[in-house]
Image (tube, rainbow, N blue to C red; front, side, top):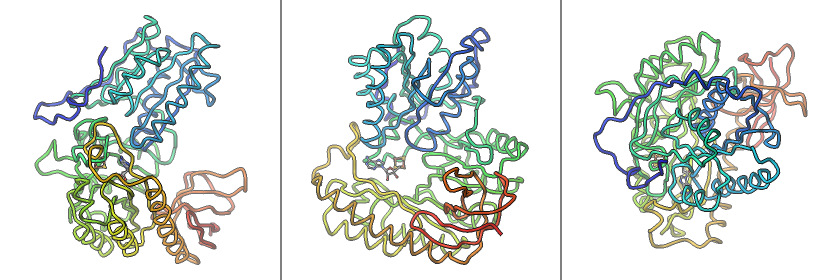
Length: 469
Ligand code: 5AD
Ligand code: SF4
């Protein structure tokens, strides 16, 4: 048994982390043929991609996927810790599973993802959720097949979570959820330690994958006719810093742009690590999509400092303006937190002022959520619940107005759209533009995975309607 430990999770010493190649014991390949699994994924794209790896590992064991947890022999929750409501959702699901297990004694229940890395969650599971068969951390996910096999063979709860450093694993099998666009991890973990954020504790230190491994994965995707790669990391702009003296995200993007892949995206970017060269490279290559997610979190310098964000409103705006100037047609989206401890009405007004200046194409807005073990938890000046709700409401009204205003400007324009699906409800196709706008459209002879020209006929707040031409 290995339990998570925040003190260890916080360490960032010079020790080299382990680089592990995935291997699976031949004796357990297809051992569970005929059994069925259900996986529920909460949270971000990193988790979605981890679930693609988890699915592949389960399928190596012989499990087949089902879409309803009631039909499964094994249920795995891939969890998220970022805000309290993600937590509550996963615990709600565990409650339902507890009932199911009363009827279905052989049901195997597992938990992974960021919540597995939280000491308080694992303590609760040891104490009150004894029906959970196994917990496996994000840093040693490659051990999943063995942990499941041991949990089943021993019939004892397995808790295998490591906090220190985190390993970097290569060669995990993958079952991709989409045949046109593919996630590719480039860096794991985060060393920024923004004071509100749990991620540096649950995902470990920044560990970049070797460029050769990334380029090989992209090459295979090109050979398989994928149309889009999405480079993933908690902070992709720190790529390479831990591995190379003179190779960073700009170099990686440039090498990938020269491969024959129509669309490249990347997320998420921390403004602090964004260099001029990165902006130039994004502006130079037409297959690097002109859409950047650039979380600002707040427009008040006082709050940014308390958040430990390492930039000011002024330096953020300088970067923002540089992107607008150098990357043709770029759209920028953001994340904003309201109700951070100490946020006054004036601080909030500064956030609204910044939003009014930036006129974001998209924004994810959140109420500050206390995460146990993070420094912001202990900050004075807690904002009362009603005020937080009211600020979120006011902020959303402003951001939504700009989404619609921006979208209205696209009416009559022709956008390139990667066709991702067809909705059965209204028989319309859907996909995303280069600038990451969701487009619903009509057309004839359209194939999924094609990139087609769509004339925009009408704009809504979160999507656009049009017709293929
Ligand atoms: N409370 C509210 N929002 C948070 N985020 C991260 N931690 C918290 C928290 N404790 C938001 C940030 C981040 C996004 C992924 O989630 O805006 O950019
Ligand atoms: Fe969290 Fe900040 Fe790291 Fe983003 S950069 S994952 S907000 S600590």
